[in-house]
Length: 596
Image (cartoon, rainbow, N blue to C red; front, top):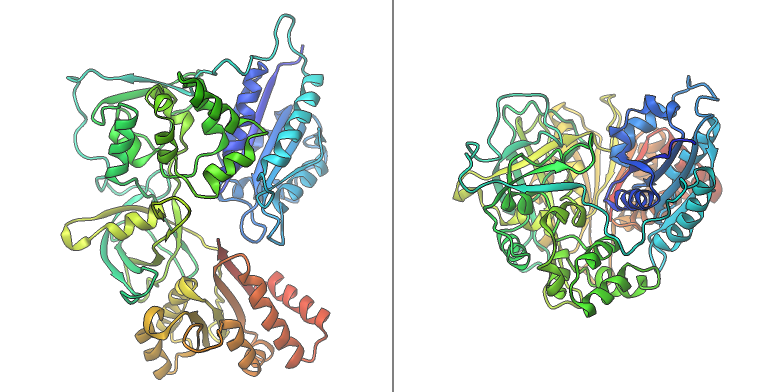
């Protein structure tokens, strides 16, 4: 009988694809499969030719890009020299997670499905296209697709005689067992984030503990939004970057939340433990020290402020000793209860910690070894670097809006990373922040005389500040910036810096202050008004155009005035203008980086 082995590979940016991949892993274990769940980039892709059964779960990010943890896999898979039949022994299925409000909806999943088919793979099902925009989220597609997938897989790999699906009433074992150390066992020396001896370039597994040098509010005190310009010292880290790159910051939970969590679960924050994998050969969480304290686990690892997913309530229901609470948890984890779960969790952005408050009988019964199955790890946050090494050697600056908003819950919602960073005060001692740098999506032209048109409303101006500083340091003119904000007196970031560069002839600046007059004025209006200049730079100067900022709607809002420039100044028809803009995008003369 064929060996019942399944491999689930995921590409995940925000954690949804990983959560879904782990769900498939659990369903596989209930069906007695040997199952591995791995991020695409930690899997040795050369082994794919030996695999018989693989499920791919992948998200699509931004403008149709693969998530960071599958980029190497993606490059390998699309190599021209891979022989057409190299995956002919592979039965596979692709589950995509996307958002249909973006033009390239589930682009990565569709392309992956097609490529594996080209290489000889045998698809068990058509590609599944999960959609965030659906009232019930991606599960509306995922649930029925998984039922169909298991039918197909069990037809190929039937149960051994006497075996059947492990009942949903049985709780699967945890990924790790947790062993408390005796109170008097020796302590390893020192703190956990000490600057270490120089090693390889900082990365997610080895972040650099950068010193925060300054943390300055750049919006008026009366302005509704708190925006910071924060500077870090990265001397001795080996970090190098150029304009358009991104700094990744690993945030942590605030002490009050950590204390509350430990009280709710009746955990002693100072207890020390070691983890052992339940399955032989499985690896331990790379970012946790061994031994580790409960306080370190909760502060630096468990994302207790994230909005919990369906899988959280499903696992929680197994520990419930209270009938009312158990019924509610089971409802939240059922397909029928997804609308109710959405209005309980997602709409008001209720956190994991707040949800645990609502189920007190269950919460105090959670076995500590299940914590790592129950709560995902804290993910690093990405910020566009807002400075150039040529202007500020050994420094990294970011322009960060502090995330704070109201929902129907009485307590305002706060962004984990921005709230933590805003709370740090470098004037009160040595403040360290774990960080590393990644290549960003924006690439600026190497040729010294190529002009650049930059469109950066709000904090979208951050990467352009880096680019302008870099280009000015190299003596390059031809810098044109369209900047938009609400009011000149309240949120005109870096005003003095821009005005000085305008005076020196290094910068052409066009500003739109939307609330400073009766009718709202945005950057797209300024592009329209200056269409002759934009056309001249594009047609005779071979200018590159860059767009950065917040929001799904922005690329479309800016594409419109650019198309009208091409029509009114360049004499193109609407369809020619659209095609011309698409051609600029293909040749990387029009690049955008947006975030939601």
